[in-house]
Image (cartoon, rainbow, N blue to C red; front, side):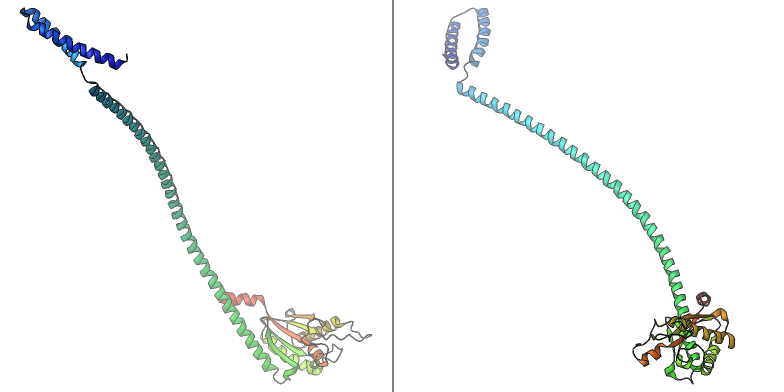
Length: 311
């Protein structure tokens, strides 16, 4: 027999013996035994009545107990899960606090660097502005000096043109080139063909130039001889166009120094041969333009520096 049937029979037998005992008790007249028997009856009844609970009610209680046990298990699991979540959040909070502290430290460091850089930049900017101001002043001085030099050059050009106003304009060119004044004189006014001996008219022209040069003692004088591309006649005393151009420049320098007292320290003679032409050497007219003597008036560097300092 299974457990359920055994319990059922025990409950039926217990109820039967209880009824029989109560009937016997009602027929007994001795009080003390009756009291003992009554106490025994109560205890036995409690035991028997507890076993007289119905199967359905027992099952309900057992289910309820199981539900409570499961609920305890679930709550315990929930509490454990909450604990794990709390630990995760604590770790996250600790990580965020560490990150925040790191960022605050970097921010403070960057702020100090920015402040230092701002101060340095301000100082550098002030210094740069001061340097720019000085440079601007220097450039202003240079520009003023150049303007002054240009004015002197223009005055020199006007003086030369005034001194040589009676000479054919086609044979003499007075101009400013690369910041310096020059006088280019056609060789037909100074020399015979293939010769470096000055003519009488040449001496007169150079005298007028010397007058202007002596009035400007701060200018040096460079005399350049230029020839055409024709070959020098064989057997003459002139070796080639290099020799001819140098000899002609030297002849002009001697006249300026010896006859018109231009300081020889200011004079330089140079020959350029035929390598700086101003016209085509294929025509007679072009070759005539290339045969020239160029007198260049060079401002002394000391004079230019003086102009800078004065400005």
